[in-house]
Length: 78
Image (cartoon, rainbow, N blue to C red; front, top):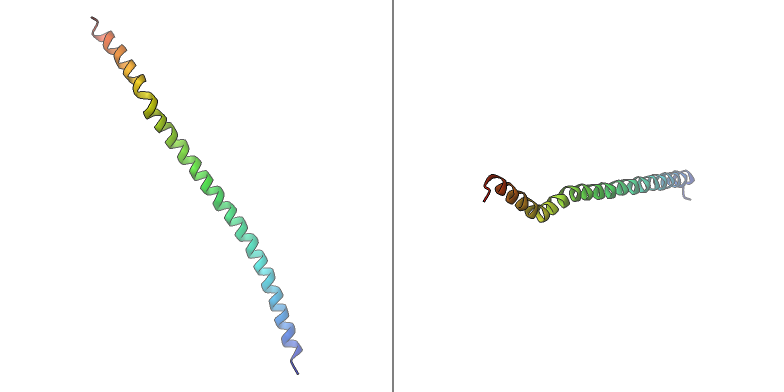
């Protein structure tokens, strides 16, 4: 005849295991959410740095060229 105390202890261990697994699943969900937001924040930070630099390279040369022409005409009048 099987030992009922052994079954009860196994049942208690399985119940504890399920509770701990549920808690770990909740913790993992929070960690994944945190990592996702960290990736989004990192991407936004890089974009905030790179986009103005690229736009500066595209739009500033004509402006600088115009300022240099104005400066040259002021220094060396014809």
